[in-house]
Image (tube, rainbow, N blue to C red; front, side):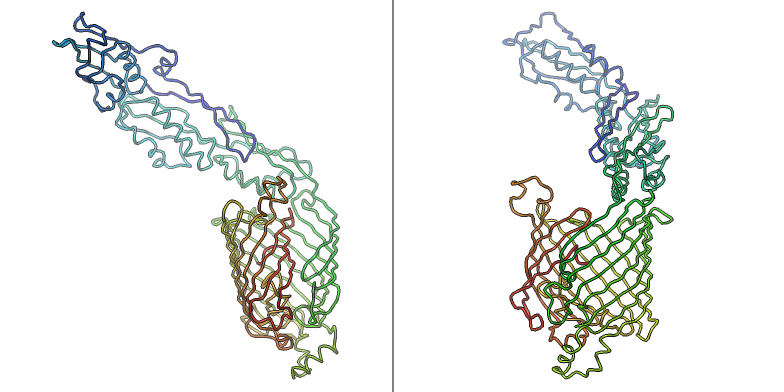
Length: 637
């Protein structure tokens, strides 16, 4: 009466396609009899030999059901095509008996007795024999799903006759319950019926026997395996494997990563093979671009994303730009020169911890201190750790040193401005204040974005504290910064992006080179860099709607063109505790802008943003009432 076992054949190819499971169930004796077309022992028995099979003369006056205890009479009658008042027909009765048998609740001992009545019609008596009842279930082998969850699938079968069809459907539902949580190898291996009608359900959840790495010639095996968080002895989970594969792809060391699963008959477990297709990870790059702060620039760089086959990243970049693009009279027209060397160990001591080093040199016309040349030299080390209990939450600590030096770029012009506004020339030294600082920057980040390049939904929030301790004549200072950005999907490909940012001085004296500024591609678009103002604190918000180029997907299937997004935006913000520069250039200190732009997403680089914004409020400091172009890269964070 019971399905004694089930054998399963799995096919594993694309790790991101749903695996199809071909199930060949071992049939119980009754089910085999049905499939082999061996009819059950059903038969007609007349109480009078003169009962005729004549649809004109003989009708069914009544249908009686005998022998059922657990199955409702209404259910049995519902399976019959012959009803009271229908013409009597032996062939139809035989078909109805076979249909009852195939419902799964009854043995082969089903009979029909047509009883002749005085008026020449018949009373049809159906006699059934129910299968033994199911008194309960015992679940064995389940660790990933609770017995309560599995019993929710089986509880409707308790107290009813054993039914192979219902039991097989329950088996499939149990396996689908497992698969829905990523346990795609889990299967019910057998059902066993004991003498007191308790059915034991045995489950094999699919334990990993071994994890092998194939196809890597440069990357060390342990580097690959440390990105595979599942380990031998654990139950295989496709959702976790998907995350592991994405983590391996994120190292940029591989063109493709696949996984193959094979059942090991000797151990009764599953061996997982991670198949890798390595790519060239070293690169020498030459590039040109445009940016609001760097102007037209050229760059040369060297990068290695799999340094010594250890998954480490080493980068050296040198950039030279024309300086502030569309600069105004507050910025020295001077080339922007920068060089940076960085190194990242993505798994420092543990899988969820990284360590990075950076050294940099910068020389440019300052956009924060008017008509000054800004030079910076320094380096830092940053430790980042993801929280194990909250995969979206991480913390970082950055420690570094920086020497900041400012010098005059146009002494005569700045003195004219001081005289015009009645400010003592001695205060210029205050503006040019620099120094040698040791910095400590702890930060907390919460990130649920679906994609860090072309995000459609999710949230990113970051709060950081910067404490700069001076080892020169300059004062020490501390700053607190926060940002919250939410991505809301709209339609199939559009999204609404809401941003809130704020920051402020919390201790010490904030030099003007470290002041907060508003204006430019990463704050209030429609203004040049720092055109809104600079000070000891700020707050701002932005709303932006991004949408694809209309009908582009109908014109071409090119993914690059289809990923371009047009945008409409509104920005608003205010600076607190204005600086000397705000007085020299009559900057408003607040602003509201609206405009439109385009987002071009470059793989491995991020988005290039071109925006045209129009100030909607006081523009006396901007010097342009009709709008302003800004260029930038990436989202404002």
